[in-house]
Structures are given as C-alpha cells and as structure tokens.
Image 1: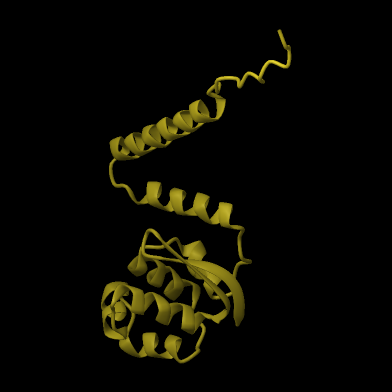
Image 2: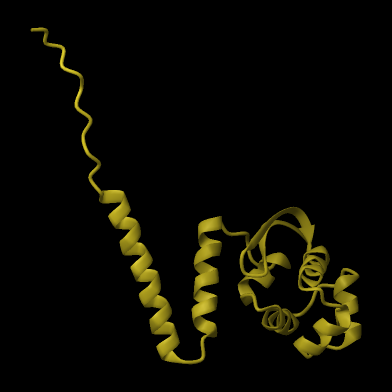
Length: 145
C-alpha cells in the first residue's frame, strides 16, 4: 500500500516522503541507520528471509511491525502508519506521539519525572517570552514650540 506521510529518521531529522510504499520507508530507515537487512533481522528478532520479503513488498503482520518498531526505536504507530494500517497524522500529532514514545521508553519513573519537569520548564520559558512587555515606542512629538 502506498501512503503519504512524514517519517522521522533518527531523533532530529525529518524527511517528508510522499507516495512512499512501506518497503521504501523501511529501506530509508535502514540506510539512515547504516544497517543491513541482516542487522534489522538480528535487532528485531525476525528472520532474514522475512525482512527480505518486506523489502521486496510483502506486508508484515502486526507482530512483525511491532518488532520492526522496537528495533528502529520508533513508536509502533509510526510503523503502522508507514505500512498504511493507520491514517497519516498532522505534524503536531507526530511530535506528541514522539514525546509519548520517548517518555514511555524510560525505564525509571524518576527519569520520566525529570523529562516532564524539563518540558514544563521550557513551556514556562516560552510563555515568559510571549508575555514580556516590550518598551513602548513614543511617537515623535508633533507639537512645535
């Protein structure tokens, strides 16, 4: 299935990909990670033959998609969207999904709390910037002496 979507490659690079089939999406991730098909198979727990089938256009099962998501360190929803099993999301929703995925991947509750505290700090700082009062410009006096 061919879908229009935005994908995330690594943690900071965005690539807009239009009319990309799942196998092309998967190849793009492998290339960005500098992984071979064998490496994806090893990291995902799938067989080399299964990965080869997906690269050649076969649609993975839900379980295989979840394994691919885990191996690529992306949310399962991102992989399901790439496979055309979920509709594309707006960019803002993609960012929210990434934050949720990252928070969910932390092992310790203290780490999650620290990350949330930092996000809250950033939100407050942004609000401060928005509400700072800029000095008013005084128009030149039009009165003549």
